[in-house]
Amino acid sequence: MVDGGGTVALQEEVALQAEGSGYFSGIAPDARAGSRYRYMLDGGETCPDPASRFQPDGPHGSSEVVDAAMFQWTDRGWRGIALPHQVIYEMHIGTFTKKGSWCGAQAELPHLAESGVTVLEIMPIAEFPGRFGWGYDGVQWFAPSHLYGSPDDFRRFVDRAHSLGLGVILDVVYNHLGPDGNYLAKFAPQYFCEKKTDWGPAINYDGSDSGPVREFCIANACYWIDEFHLDGLRLDATQDIHDGSDDHILGALGREVRKHAAPREVILIAENEPQQVKLVRTPDKGGYGLDALWNDDFHHAAMVALTGRNEAYYTDYLGTPQEFISSVKYGYLYQGQRYKWQKNPRGTPGLDLNPAALVTFIQNHDQIANSAYGERCQKLASPGKLRAMTALMLLAPGTPMLFQGQEFGASSPFLYFADHGPELAKQIRQGRVDFLAQFRSLATPEMRQRFADPGDPATFERCKLDQSERETHREIYDLHRDLLKLRREEPAFRAQRRRGVDGAVLSGEAFVLRFFGDGDDTGEDRLLIVNLGIDLHLDPAPEPLLAPPAGSGWATRWSSEDPKYGGTGTPPLDTEENWRIPGHAAVLLKPNPKPDPNHA
Image (spheres, rainbow, N blue to C red):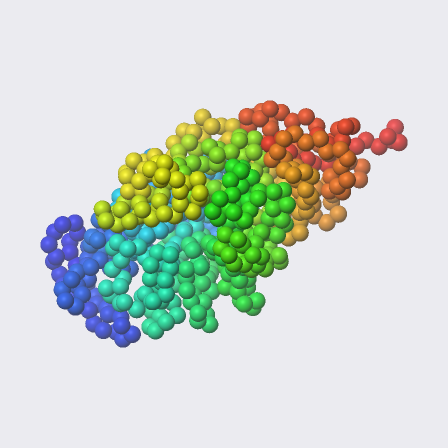
């Protein structure tokens, strides 16, 4: 059924003819870009298109015809992105700017490029109900949310990002559909199966009649690559994508996405709570051929070290120097050991993984929101500790990821928000309270009363960034920008080589990491000393990693205690009194050739 758009009466009915395999098709000769339409199902109910390209009035309104070929791209020279050397920036379009739109976000792109980030990871945008939300309850996978602008506004955003050298990847949810506006089941109940996810029925990727379901998912992934020139995808909660077939949907999806992108390069990143490294192993080694995995272990250890709390899912972390050394060298901390919190082994062996295949972070959308008030790290940790941890994350060989506003110490919180009808909103509000109760400190009656209401528009508004803080918080911004410049320009950091770094514990809260230059070029070695405790006088110092290259001493290359970052200065570390290491600091040293005393 085709209408003229908006609220006008339906003008044309088009009968659909059976094609086989459960599909129907028809031609609407008067339809054009901008036309609105709905499907009439057996029994007379009219529904929007589950594969709609745009829902201008939300998930329950009529679908709109979109002609992607009309958009004039200017990025023909863009070759895509490969995983090495990337710095990811996670962002939510609705809160990234006060406007909460693609247009508003596009205006900030030059600043992001200047900061040193290289890839923008957009939180889910598939059409979802309500006036605001995180996007993980999307119901029309092919329709960019009308809340942020038109599909062409999204294309303009990507086109501009590419012109500035920024890649764009999209967070997609292929494990479930949201509860409100999910019309897919009305068209074919076979899209869902009896398996369960944390959010309801799982999608049918391996059961009866699963072929068209797999096709629907893979077509969606390729659609973002084809019609929006995206540079890859971040796959949400892959542990809840259930597929026991010989050709797992993630492997099949990855192959097709790369075919559609060629000759452009794309990256595919997975969130996987059980830390199953087969996702990033090549098919010849029994893997799915994805590029990278989120590394929650690094985050959890960092938060324990920064806050002193190891409640709930932080229970199995102590934030010790050895945890950070092991994380930098080997990626995941848990690769099959017993994990008390889950009463099971956690992780799978991945000692051989390329460091770039693990995405490291100290903030992301989930982890900020999983606190009492949605507070960012600068509200939970001392400034010196946070500067030191930031240096560790941004110089370590993994692929670093920042969350929007982190680069300038945004004062706005990031809370969970979702706009639903009264009954569902009540369930979500209670669900949030129940989830946070795993933290002993948040399970008390006085704290339960203080959690923000996810359905209150004020909760959403509080999360919007104030981009002017890039200047008013210039010390924090300069810290991030300078570290990313070091990462980009110093060979020892840029290499991201497996076994390219080693480390040693210096005290209960201090450690050293030595990043090795290429081959025999010890002049490119870099020493990063991190002390999350009090000032340390290391005497004696029986640790060979502290020894400088032959004919050299150590000179300070960079310090988190530089006054330009709000620090208090950094005296020399390697002195005649042996090593004196400042507390709550990270100091980077480089070899400094000593003059030959025998040379006149």
